[in-house]
Image (cartoon, rainbow, N blue to C red; front, side, top):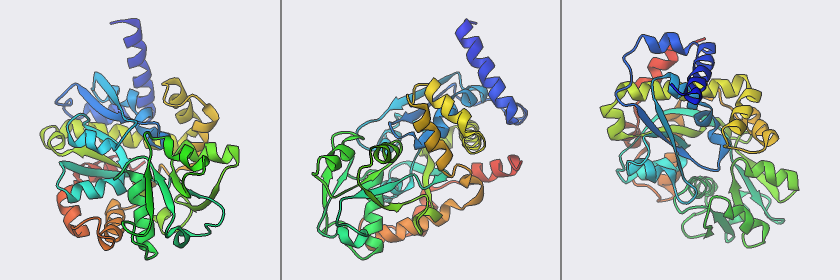
Length: 331
């Protein structure tokens, strides 16, 4: 064994032991496959899946790959089989489930990582009627969530606003700064950067403002065939992600250090601000079905999906692993 691999496994074992992972994992068969693939994106609200790298190794995955996504929707990579399991925002998942894409929601992770920045003169969501909103991808989480917000106050997101699509994850922020858009929905580390530069005004903070703060933002999504073929691997991967969420909630400084050490964020203070501010313990406390019902109703009202909330729940969720892990991880 190489020195690097030895240190990697030692780190994983140390991290895992502190949270009881070894005891739980040893009672189960090993994962059916040795490799697991997750999404890598500039959005560091996905901190648990980056912190989970060593935990995934301890769960028996010898290869943990992060597939880089900077343009478009990471869910497409999952649906196409290029990614096995990953965190992603629930809002963008629902339209793809409505289209019959082979995705399955396994758990909620955290709530409230988005902030809606606007220009002067926009005092509330209703004032966005007729305005231009910058987004990073058509059908992306920012597009769908803002659409849900607009529909909630009676604005048709398909007809009564203009959408300006950027060429990368970061471009909507620059389009807003350059005065080409009246609003954009920022997710970490963008809100922290905007606040540091004292740019724009926030009219919705989904970690604080109801009803958005009551529901999950990011959920764990798997490829349907992966979940069906590799149930042990699915449960082990989900356990690592949930334990990593606990680390972020209980030891934010540790989570931020891991983000920086592994190269997912270069600025420790930004990473720490994100990890400290987000409700990473929410997976233990809230029902992801409530989140699906809420956003599915908004999107159905706006004509963006055809399926009822219950149909999406029936065809696009699997709570077996989450229910088992909640019993195992009560402490």
